[in-house]
Image (cartoon, rainbow, N blue to C red; front, side, top):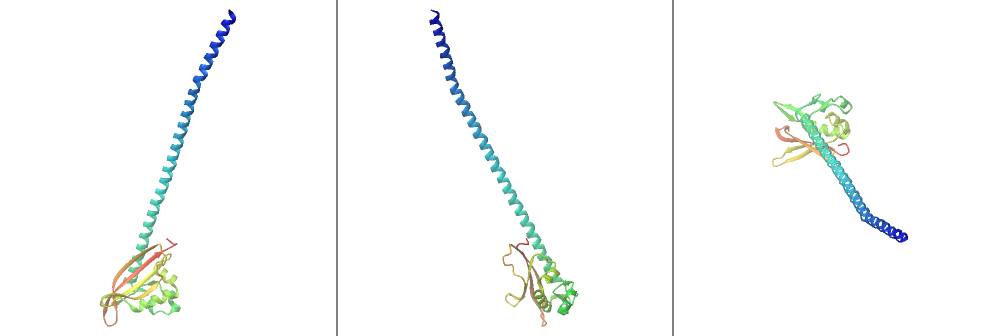
Length: 211
């Protein structure tokens, strides 16, 4: 009788243990699924954070590049206006710099293309030709006398021919592969000997690697 009771009790205990173990299987499975879901959410959050961070860095660089380009454009535009003004409204220093011999060109302190004709400060064709010659002889020095040190400079003189403004003199360097170019123009009168004629002074400031 006692053996039968013991056997029954053992069977009951084993059945309980099996039931308890079986009940743990879905619980552990649920824990595994929750861990997987948590890992997926964490990975997604990290990925989104990295994407947002990269997008912010890219947008910041774009804004900085635009600001830099705008600053460079403003600087080039100002430089072109200053050169055009110096050439158009000044006779240079000394005023007769165009008459100096090549050997004395180092005594030129400032370049200007104007000469007084009565009450007009007219564009002097002799000075225009002399400036073109100086730029051909020593472009860097001529450019520096106009306050341009790093950028490229080109000057065009156009004279009204009755129907259009034709280029009568071109000097300096063309823009070429420049990344940015700024242009300034000044209206002038030209002392043509037989009378005053309308003219235009065009100044181009360009830059490539120096920008």
